[in-house]
Amino acid sequence: MAGKVKWVTDIEKSVLINNFEKREWIQVTENEDWNFYWMSIQTIRNVFSVDTGYRLSDDQMVNHFPNHYELTRKDLMIKNIKRYRKELEKEGSPLAEKDENGKYIYLDFVPVTFMLPADYNLFVEEFRKNPSSTWIMKPCGKAQGKGIFLINKLSQIKKWSRDSRTSTFVAASSGKEAYVISLNGKLSYWILKSLIVPIVLLLKHFTIFLYKLGFCRFCTVKYTPSTSELDNMFVHLTNVAIQKHGDDYNHVHGGKWTVSNLRLYLESTRGKEVTSRLFDQIHWIVVQSLKAVAPVMNNDKHCFECYGYDIIIDDKLKPWLIEVNASPSLTSSTANDRILKYNLINDTLNIVTPNGDIPDCRWNRSPPREALGNYQVLYDEEQAQSENADRDLRSRSGQSLGSKGSKGSAGVRPVAATWK
Image 1 (cartoon, rainbow, N blue to C red):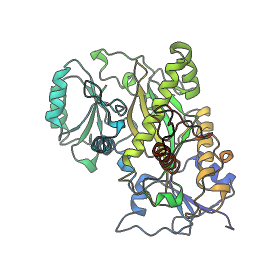
Image 2 (image 1 turned 120 degrees about the horizontal axis):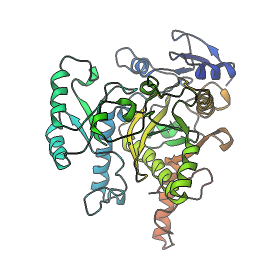
Image 3 (image 1 turned 90 degrees about the vertical axis):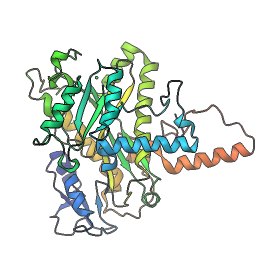
Image 4 (image 1 turned 45 degrees about the vertical axis):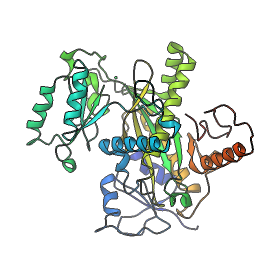
């Protein structure tokens, strides 16, 4: 399609604008004809609003799905994952298998979670089973560590309940609801979920790309379970928005490691086998969390989404999904940060706007491997269904299926669609 892409953004970040200008795209205003709009989550609500929204044409693309919040709001993420588990149980799926203690074997990747005040009685019952445990309380719709505090006594919940009537602690859109999880750095992965256009219309057919150059964040103060440090957010929260105000914050590395450095460290201290298992489990979490919201996600063909996954790794190297961010920070806190995020946007644009051409939402081809840059294909729903159909056919004909849960042989896919 001839012509230059006309772009708009309401997020003035150099890593975005430099990538647009590098492609010689043309900047316009939102009131003019545009092809590509990198927008905030507040703006996307207006674009798809029943009252104020408008119909997008085939040559327009935006960076959020209409109801991305089904995954990125903490309370809805938990609700959808719980629903997904129950549906798999009803279907008799082996993925919903439980151990002798009633815990999911393959789907136990979110901490014990309650919504307050709705789940208060259930929370009290669980709290009394382990009265010495520490819990983290998070508002449902806030980010960057805002409004988070830790508790180890029920009286602290009651105090929050009283104070929240007049404070701005809880996100306005959810009243007094808050999100509580049991508990320690945080591993942040960049995830690009891009839906190949005709498959998007089928809702459940999607492709997930994993960005290989992720990073991990650490606190500037060594972790301690001491109750005397319960209010010290420099011990418990890895958010840069929090840590940068600490006396020990390092402005050179920003309290971050690359994922590759983390992997090297873990391989040298814990061994390659357990480290590989950890990263396999992280990939599994990404796929299953996205599959959990697929039935309720409005997979509009004009959309793609760049998610930031927050995953905590415990002392047994088990990963836990804490939350998923719809608008991962594009602010660069260090030189390496700036390079990473510039390359992230560059590789993302190469996938969603092939060859830098004007978007065509009818385009239905998978990007060639050389266009992926630092992304790798983590899951392809179309191929998964093809593999399942082939497996069923071979099963009926009596051919061997190989070992259960084995990895696939596709060159660009490190994890088979049926992998556990």
